[in-house]
Image (cartoon, rainbow, N blue to C red; front, side):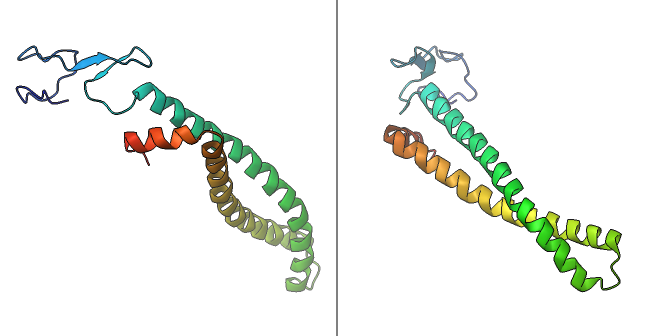
Amino acid sequence: MICPKCKSIDQLDRFCGHCGHQLKEPCPECGEWEPIGRVVCKMAVEKIERKIIEAGIRASGKIFIYTIMLMCAVIPFLFVLSIHFFQQQDVVARIYFATFLAIIAWDIISRSWERRIKKSEKEKLFREHPEYVEILKKAGKM
């Protein structure tokens, strides 16, 4: 932090170590000491960011469940498809091939779902709490 009065750099306390100018004041919302002239409460922004992270965690759980459900349908299909490539009925080769294709499908599908589900969870959070959008915009986080 830079002192607005003497322009001294790296001020971390409530008052400037060089000129004594007050740099921080108690936040009227949470009581924490924050820089004078701040736009929004730092604790409010951190609370919203935690809620966004929690929404992402919920989304991750959904992604895992959806992907497992899809793989239960895809793996047998890939096993049958592998019969086409391995006419000699080599079961081990078919299992490896089906597993390889399933891993690739799992990766592609889960990445696609992850983006969509996390975005929808974040949008849902902002629909339920429109004030969060304003706070984050004021804080320069959006």
